[in-house]
Image (cartoon, rainbow, N blue to C red; front, side, top):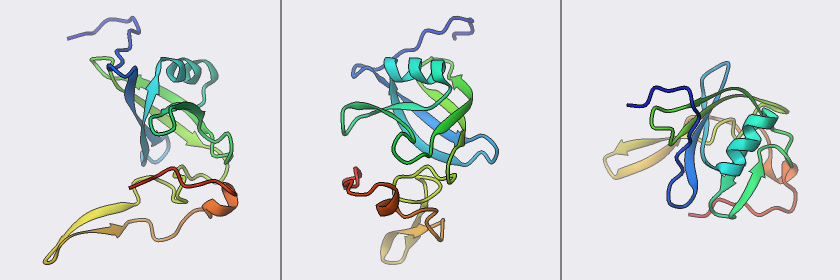
Length: 142
């Protein structure tokens, strides 16, 4: 068990680690993402959320195009130093999901007689992605 005071992040073989992002005031989970060494360093030095996009293979500053910047209140690292938790205030309109909802976790998995389905837990979008990201393709692909 590691209980020292030295920051020694352990990135996986791809050079990344998971990051949980919650809204500081409410505790709402906004997103789960990834950080590489550069994004962790930039997040620490700037006080704003920087992440590594696995799909686009690039560093991104949350809110650079939308204005929904993650202003970091607290950065925590787990006991193995292989995952991070950011507690943030979301600037702008207070949403974090590029689909338009406050949280990326806007649906629950429901068990029904016919099988499984998704039910929306957020009834309305916070913003229209076509207005906030004009001309941009949705990066989420199923």
